[in-house]
Length: 214
Image (cartoon, rainbow, N blue to C red; front, side, top):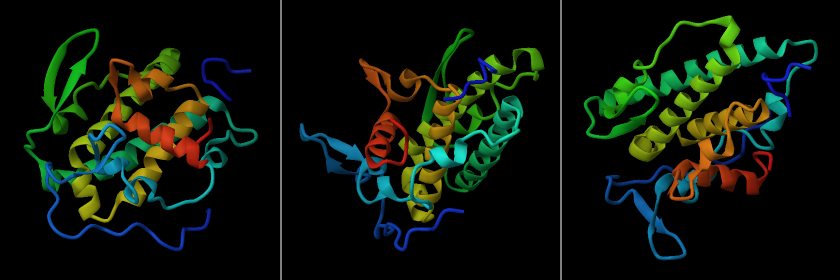
């Protein structure tokens, strides 16, 4: 495993998941059940949780290329994740601008609830090469929160757009890269035992299926 804190086209699957017919609402977006009888969100249900554009392990596309500086590799990939995530965000704005769903933000400066559409622009800061490792880790955690918000609040829209294979693949790539270069801690993905994060179950599912490294 590489770390920026210590500097020493795969084939498409033949079939994709079907897009559900009918109306999806917050009420009927919980369609499967867990062992204790409680409902699961759609993004954790088959076939949506397993929809993807690529097969195999994402380790192969996050490995540091030969002769490449690790800082440059991380920076380029961070920009790519931002670009791709921002494209999903821009499309969702056509459907959910002014949505009632909010993000709970808790950091050193403040603790508040804000609209998801405002969160993307809220925590910008100037780039400092001397603090790049710390800054990029902070950025990565913010990206994770945006992914989690979209899965939790807007996955029905992702399904209607038939984009779940694209979004799942982007998130799996994001998780694989973050773990490879130690940009995410396990607790960032899974949450605390008293406050688990839903997308952490996707991470566990994809590890079991071989998409992500254990």
